[in-house]
Length: 171
Image 1 (tube, rainbow, N blue to C red):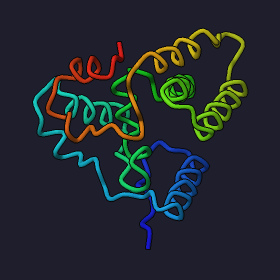
Image 2: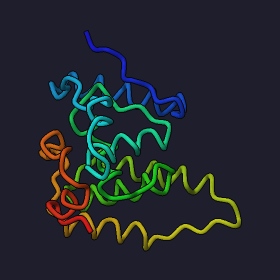
Image 3: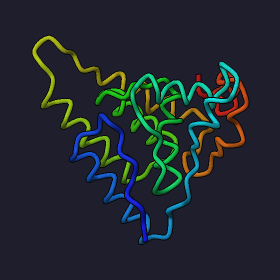
């Protein structure tokens, strides 16, 4: 039986429901994997390593690692660390644009469109949304050699973050 996904304290209920649905779908597809990110192991790594930076990122954003579902879902926060995109709706949209550039999937397209809807609904008159930022994120993904389905961060956690970014041509 599938365990429920770990909820981060600041995830809205509707996002948690979406994540639970994704877990059920990937379970049906046979794509769920056991837990990859073990936060205590990452915290024990030296400063400036990819793994320690990942742990710090989770702590700074009051997040817990995804521990259920597909590899791609569980490694989502690591892509934030590699790219530097935020966890706000615009940062999430940039991340999806980056992922679309690396490997086009309908899931990323749908997530990106959903995020654009959220952004549009929540912008106030003083906020600006830049389509250029999404285009730049897409281009950045297109020109990288990052494959979100096959990368193995567990083999890279001990390396400096800048080395891992260079490995995938993520500047």
